[in-house]
Length: 393
Image: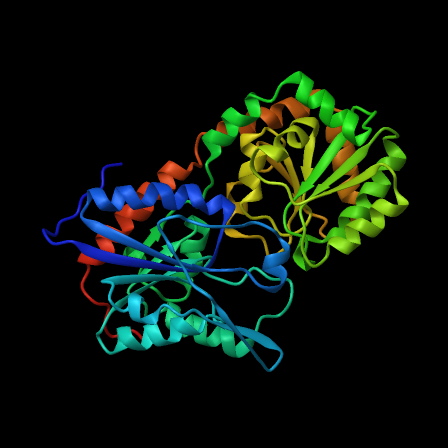
């Protein structure tokens, strides 16, 4: 996609992130030169993760960005955050922030837009993917602002639908097809050697042919107790089944306790980039019965089909899943036994497993960080040229 700037003068865009995760760095590194080619300077402000986010161990830095020190404010059992970048952000022609009611700078920037000082854009899911009831006040404030910002960068088409349902005009929504660097991951996965796989298995003491994997942050929405119960049922039917857990988070103790009583379970902690690859290549399936987000793209790129359930709080990326073509959606949400049956069925059916892997290969060609950066850049150029949004309530 070719992106162009219609203005002859240099524009400035600021993106404010509470923190930058490792998977986001390739996106920002591709977005910046695309904007520069169109005469737009990009400023990125990012803080450090706190609490449960910090326990994930996935924070990264962007060399040309500006680190800031977030201030956490606890109010009525809720954590709010002040991101100290207001002065710099207000000098930008367009400010893009995460759609989150806990980010206090969003309210000040929104007020500045209402006053005609600057243009504010939201970037996000369109709704809160959470198993717990969200804050009513926070959700109401977020929805009110979501209908009146200048532009929307929706994670994908499903997110764009959520934003339209809020009453926001479709012509001011850019669906960016949220992605990771899938092609680099495909190449890296293909480069893993047989000796590396053998070393990985030897290090863990893996003896069976049937190995599955969980990867990601460990918190309530991931349904770790459900997964562990299902794995114990799988083991009864498949005696050489072994389970790997990669990740960290506030619920990692649930996994550690299960590993302590089940020697065929293995907890490896948070691993990123190339360190994860031998474990993906050693696994037949990616088991994530709770909320699914960008992890589905790891599944595609590394040909490790995902098995999840139809919970109501998936991230929008679950829209990339085509049931029984590139992954599996188990409809019995509250049944570890039904989930276990599906996993056993797939592990004992080489033809079905091969078909899912072929679907993963096809999907990995569709969702790519280069396309995401191009879509995002085109959306920025269009937003900069658009007239202010008036008359929204």
